[in-house]
Length: 208
Image (cartoon, rainbow, N blue to C red):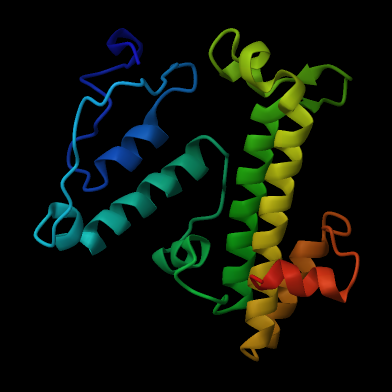
């Protein structure tokens, strides 16, 4: 990336354990960056590394970065707890309550709407296009999104739907009917959510 494109003192925030994650989630959407073919650094992994010795602090820092992203970029109104983040992260297998199911579902709704907008835009009431690529670097729509728009949107929808289905089925499987039923209602709220059969429901909730 070009240094001039990054505002402030640099892309890495001070006082954050999850420096890389916070950096990527903090970058303005108009900044273009890319991988280069040359190897310019080597990463050494060992049991005494910061990543290994500060795992919990790094995870909490990542949770905070995701919370800020959902609030600032995706306009999420709900305040997510660390337990909510554990559920979204896949560290918890089922919602602990109907209220938690609602918060997590709202987070998924907000993220899905944001990324769908980036992947192609939504039609406004006036019929004009509120195109997400306007938020992205000039030319990015033509160079990358273009004809991939439909496929990207389908991937976003199916990924979010599968996670909702997984949370619903896993909550029901633990015997928690309150949160499981709430998650199921929220999952189905936007339509059939891809639910074509009992097999589709099972496949949405569990890996093969």
